[in-house]
Length: 236
Ligand code: SF4
View 1 (cartoon, rainbow, N blue to C red):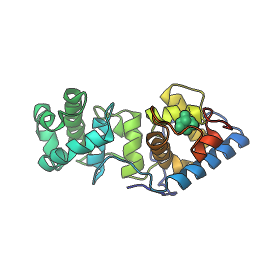
View 2 (cartoon, rainbow, N blue to C red):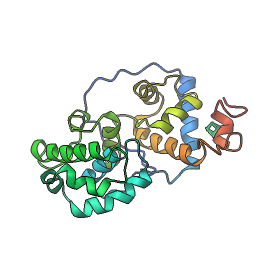
View 3 (tube, rainbow, N blue to C red):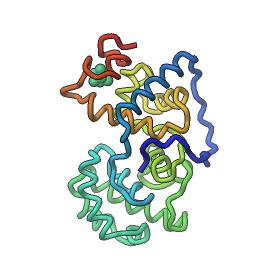
View 4 (cartoon, rainbow, N blue to C red):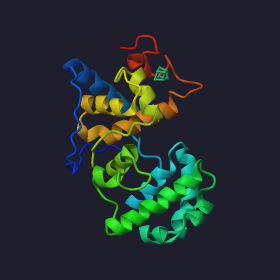
């Protein structure tokens, strides 16, 4: 599991992804925020349970519009019944549904999980691919899911995972003025060093889950909030 890694392998995706220009002052401020997040959340990591790349891929597909806690309750049974990509590829979505019924949108997700593993077996020799292009060719896999798998299973920083917490905190910390996830991701990629992209999203998500909750937010009490959030007095 990724924690405070600062190294990453070279990305294998050559896809062009133009980034916006950022001032030195903005990059320096981003570094201060990153340092502060690492200090506050030294144990931040992906909160989905998995033991290998295909389990993480499945868990991430299941996590769309669902909580990690809910996914983690369902996946042990699923992974025990179907321990390999090949075993899931051979089963039916209806059988997968029986293990994931507690998760929202389970019917579609069962189809995606079965389809993704079928493609892994048929097109990638049973191994989860390690490029953005190949990953997003799998059913149910878009850029966010691919970023989760590349960053956490393979230590490859191709982009930043932008979920609801990352969107909210990017805006509140003044890291992006956008509401669109793709544009926010570009801003974050331009502001933060590539080696920290995977950890950046974990750190923002941990702050979002622990301090910046919809109810009971720690505005004005939390040291990072006080310093950097537009919602807290003194944010800069
Ligand atoms: S100040 Fe409030 S709104 Fe801003 S990040 Fe902290 S908890 Fe969230």
